[in-house]
Every structure is written in structure tokens, then in C-alpha cells.
Amino acid sequence: MYQCFEHSYFSTLDINTTHSTCFVEGNIAGNCQILWSNYIKTRHRASVAIALLQEYWNQGIGTRLFKELIKIAENDKYITQIELGFIEGNTRARALYEKMGFRIVSANVNAFRLKDGTLRNEYIMIREIKR
Image (cartoon, rainbow, N blue to C red; front, side, top):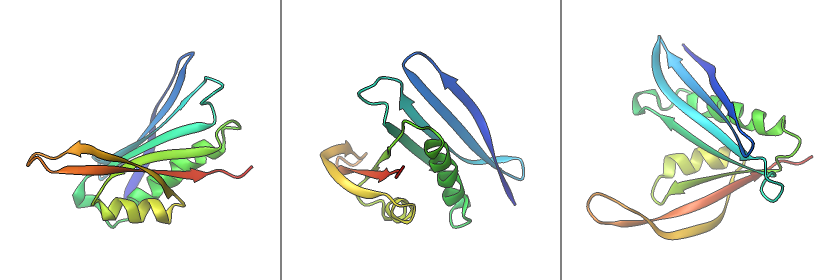
């Protein structure tokens, strides 16, 4: 059984962020973050990230963490879109993101260089929040 707890909230004049950590039997299984700005030009955008240890894949934890991030965004009256990026070839992440309502909107060509020198694209996805 796993439990997800909101770990921390941080706010300054420019930025807000919330981190959540998921524990399984007292061990950290993964975490996630949502970050948004207070500036008028970008106030409608929130960025999310998630990390989950491989041993905890396929247990619904990633989905649960994402639902929490989406709920935070939906509860903020200014946020109208959630954004994220993933590395080309990460089909598991892409499947989760699409399941959660995200769609690819652009690519950053050769954005990542792997240890072996291989270059990979980064794909940018968004999920719009209808108000």
C-alpha cells in the first residue's frame, strides 16, 4: 500500500511550487512537482514533473501523483494549461501523459545528449484546463 503526502509548498513574489512525495511502506517511491509564475504574461501556465523509482512502476502511483498535480492546477483560477517535457523514446512516460490528457505541441530537436553521445529530442506536451 502506498501513501502520497504533500511535502511542501513554496511561494515568492515571482513563483509558486508544490512538491508531493509518495511513500511505500515508509520508503520514498517517487515525487512530483508543479510550478507556476505570478507574472501576468505567464500566470496561466504551470509546469509539472514526476519521478518514480522503477520498482514502483505499474502500481498506479504515477497516475495518482498526476491526479494530485492536476487537482492543484484546477484549483488555481489563473492556470489554464499544464506543461511538461519528455525525452524521445520514453514511451512509458508518453503513455501516462496521454492517459492524463496531455498532447504533444512541439519538439526541441537534439535537446538531450545521452552518455553514449546519442542525441534525443524533447517533446513538449500540454493539458488545457477548461473553465
